[in-house]
Amino acid sequence: MAQLIDLKVGFSCNNNCIHCVISDKTKEKDLSLEQIKELVNGYIEQYGEIQLTLTGGEVTIRKDFIQLMDYVKEKKSEGKITFADMQTNARMLSHNDRAMAAAEAIDFFLVAIHSSIPAIHDTITGANGSFEQTKQAIINLKKYAGSDRIATQTVINQMNIGHLPDVYKFIVEDLGLSECNITFPHPIGVCLSDKIVPTYEYAQFFINESLDYCLKHNIQPYIEAIPFCVWNPGMNRQYAIEFLKKRSIDVIGYGGEKDGTVDYASLFDEGHRKYDTCKKCPYFSVCEGVWKEHLLIYPNEDMYKLYLKGVDE
Ligand code: SF4
Image (cartoon, rainbow, N blue to C red; front, side):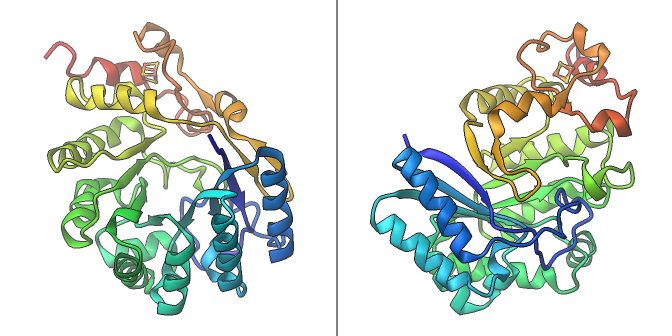
């Protein structure tokens, strides 16, 4: 199987999200097209075939975006890149030429949409008009690539948690998409704050309502950083258990000047922690825990209490 490669092409971005995890890296210089080619060619030489994820920062704002897409297309036609995907706020894909170029090169788009309410999405992204641009980009990508090549990523925060189920309703019923993520924020950089990250206890109800909605509509969301105890016993917890069995974190990549080459699987354990009360939990040995920085914001969150909720009801 082709090696999964995650390539951060630079940290420049046209959004300024309140939950941004790379806010401490925005002064780093973006990779040039030549540097990107050098890195990708190196991975191809090492592994033969790769699956490439392009991320940043924001890939689509690059001046050489069309040339980058041409290069990806070329490597795909040679069979060296077997699959290419992109994590993007997609605002620049509201322009037809960029959307068409992207659709020709990229197999799958993960588009960030953080609220169903335009003003709240724009406040979260720190960019006026970003909601409308991302929405237009999704219309373009549906036209040039097709709905089945688009998923959405919604990062939970204090501004959207209260209407989280509506965000998924919007994604399915208004945007017409059927793949999505439910992602708990990683509290690093500007995100290391209780003003941005809710407790799991507060988020629990809304997260479960969101999954209820998705499963009712035959949608299987990707879930990130949400331990088993947060999910209601029964269908939702079972879904989380099955999801974890299927997920692969065997990804390596380039994380920018500061981080260099990154092996995400070996970083995974280092990045997570459990609370003392977790020792009582039956999932203790199989659970990945929460982001270690979550304990800095909420040193006394009792995850075991969440596990117990509903167990004896
Ligand atoms: S070990 Fe802790 S975080 Fe994991 S499921 Fe159990 S209570 Fe939740």
